[in-house]
Image (cartoon, rainbow, N blue to C red; front, side, top):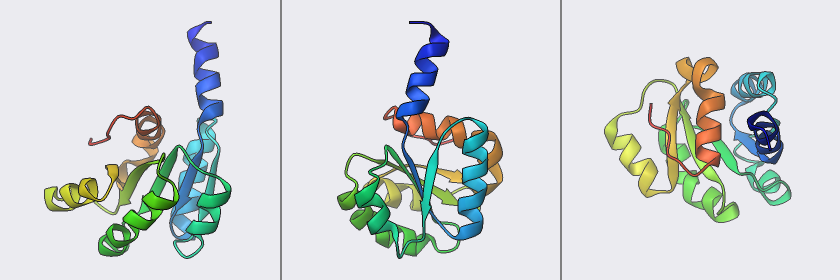
Length: 135
């Protein structure tokens, strides 16, 4: 199997759910679609329905507007989708306190919004491969 074929199979097996507000979901969908990575979106209120129906390999969780709310939701989201790697999306680079608390609650990493265009596809692939993402 060539490296190109393996990459296409890998991409086909990626399942991404973006739990965020509408504008951040659209931005993530656009960036991922450009890399041929399909994704689904939900608000935090509807996340449980989407996660039950489409168990993801990677869950992107909006922590930009309210890091505390994202951290509080994280244990429940992990129970709903225990095999998903969770990547928090923040407004700016995370503090070490936030990163430690997020890891304690089951997150695999954090990505600042300003870095989405450059790093989101790479971060998603790493988390899907069970590697943490800390730029």
